[in-house]
Length: 219
Length: 219
Image (cartoon, rainbow over all chains, first blue to last red; front, side):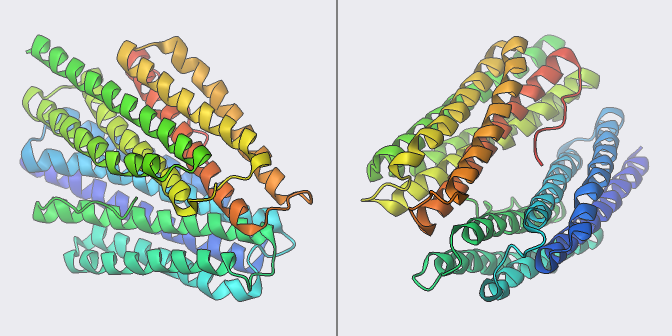
């Protein structure tokens, strides 16, 4: 019984890691569509989200089956419930990538982000994508050290977000309202992707170490 | 055993309804601080969020105890897991109210939302608050009819959000970048509060009727 339980749990975590990899792709291509204005890439991100949703449903069903059939208690119970929460967060990260791709698509044939705002936006995108990549490793390998580093990166994200908002509210901003609104929302989406990645990693850490994760940076 | 289970579950749902009422207050006062520029009201919303977080933790602990001690299966299991998800969403709605209050506080002694943009912002805030109030009733009374109406209101929210973005991107917009960015983010926060309220109600419906909720409006 215990052995069956742990095998099934391993499958759930392998599936979660696979979904996290798909989310990493979604973030990557959403950013590509944003930076290049390539509508086809944006469309691909938007339509691929259904796959993430279906994969998430399958993992949910499996986690429910484990709860119902194996009746885990204590740490095992918390691990399965953590998996259910992680799957919701991963699904949400997919949705947020779709939001980025939709802004890119909306501005085609133009680019949503003006030249001089691109470096800070690109940096936010990179930090978000890197955090998602680390979350994958944390899920796949229970890499507690990688999880610990992620919080520092999330602090960088918060700083980038503040810098970006300061830029577009400064007297030097001469691109008008539309790109400012796009950048404010894009920054919000990347920030949320980053927050969820950190939260997913913290849930894994909690499962491994038994220590309650700290509150997320939100609000 | 079954009786103890159902009593404990009733307590969890009563607690969830109480948290939802606190969230309704948070949305109400966050909006008040936004519309009046009253820093003290904004501060009160921000500091009251810790209470919502603590109440959420207590409900989580209780739901875990039910899972561990009562070992529910089938529909009962899904109900407890639904409660765990609802509590995460309610906590998140509290965070989003804090975001609204923080924008209000940031602009004191000015108002974040210019005169002519106030009606549509006020309407978004009202729809969000009304959806949270309905979610409370759905949790407290398992009112399936109230839940069904909520989807239509959420469609109105999506429409309001689009109208608001169109307003601030129009040629007539003469308030510059800062209020536009504030309004875009505020609209996003109210929209997410509304989405979560609908999702919470759908989870209750699912528990009552056994029917899978439809996908949320996001993305």
